[in-house]
Image (tube, rainbow, N blue to C red; front, side, top):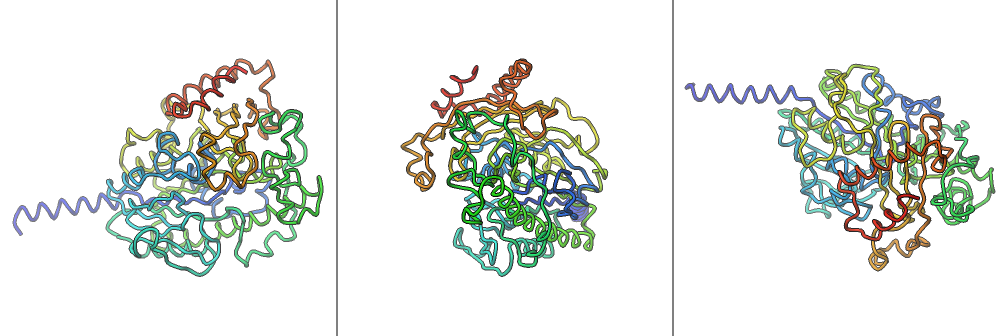
Length: 522
């Protein structure tokens, strides 16, 4: 062998060795899995022992207590995760928007770093996930039972359909295990492993029918009693919108409530809240249990194959979920249970066990952090920031004091008014501007405009402030309390600064901007 050939052999050997030292990354995301439905996060549901595998993952790694989405709805949250950008920058404001294929930044950047990339399960970003080496994803929301998938190499998108048999949580795990068994073992891998569960309508596998059947699920006090919660923006003047805003667990909402959907309106008042909640939660938690059991299968495989120690494992949800708090179901709200995301990381080589962080992170930070764990640098076009220093046990430098939130849709689906705000570690400021961003002539073209009463109506424009340190359940709106005047002023300044810095200024939506300007000093 001549010197040139020897040099090339050594060169490529070193590249291969270097690649194998890079950590594998598995990003696991469930749909609508709230942090307070995970044992490791404590709270009223923790004693039910629903998530032993996720809890153990947390014990062996780091749990983030202050992880938040910037828009608690599936498509925008997923777009922010994969792009590292906020909605007005990546262009995905609501469920109807598509993420451009050239903005699938996370797999693009990891492929540059030598990774084999794959996404399995729920995708929900409309366009084909072309920048992954392999994909097998659900079309749109997908089905719980015997789901159809769109698979790379099986034809042209979206006609590349393949059928499966079984419950989606089981099937998605099987697909990921097959991918891992047949992956390119010369490269480190990046796998996005996404469950459909526990998204409504909570169709669990039959084997969980008796799970929690004889258990009384602990109830939040705000399901029944919250006289100082909210504002006219969510309750109306003199509670005139109480039966209209926010899909309810009880019989409160005139169109959408869990009591009517499951019991035909059989129960009334407080009993309707109790019966609706118990049914809602048991169905939801049975789906969660199915996810956790399947993660046990996935984790066992990684350990058996010697992949456990060199694989970064992330567990999260695409947002939180209202589980009866404030008599609300679904997500969308800026309230804690909806805005908060579970976020747990496990990587034995660099993350010490039993770590808990209160760092204020959001879903735009996930891609930068994974890229830096893979040996790259955060691209300048990403608006999120890497928190890799925290994973190493160090303090972050020049970190944010508040995280920005914006729910763009208005009334559609669950009668939630459009709103925005910021959350710091101790306080939360919310402004309900109560109007869809599209002109009336535009949104009336959409199919949903005829399905939901009052989509084109403006709801009251009001502010809310919550002192999270003293009122973690957000039972008392303190906006009109003089004691908080300086805090409100500071948060408004930070809200304005974030909107300008993050390209969230509504320059293309003058009607919304006018509402914000008019009511800024209310």
